[in-house]
Image (cartoon, rainbow, N blue to C red; front, side, top):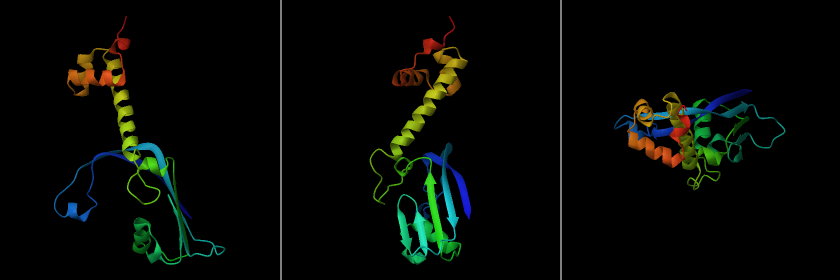
Length: 173
């Protein structure tokens, strides 16, 4: 049995470098980070008490007898590439639901408000924290905090209003 634990990744910009139409004609840049949530993958020999030769559990469950019958493209091609012979059991589980990770449960288009919303919330949390830390370092001085953050003062003021952050709370009295 093999069990892996991999941090989930949030992509902010870039991508497409795994698509042949893209990488055959150019290059790419990806800006991403990992978060403190994980995906776990378990792979083991499938037991004889089951009727099917291959069982896959991810946002859905597949029970098939041949690798060619697997609907999940990634799982099917990994088993082919690694020349894994049935019986085999593969299961994935994550600290976040599939809808938040941008994985549709039915294989259809991304449901409204899933990955994009989660990504936006992560960006907003990051921005709030970054702003709070800069204001604390500069005792509420917006000009110095903005300069330290590499942004225009006006932009920082817009962010302060957007997030309801009062710079005066960081000023020494």
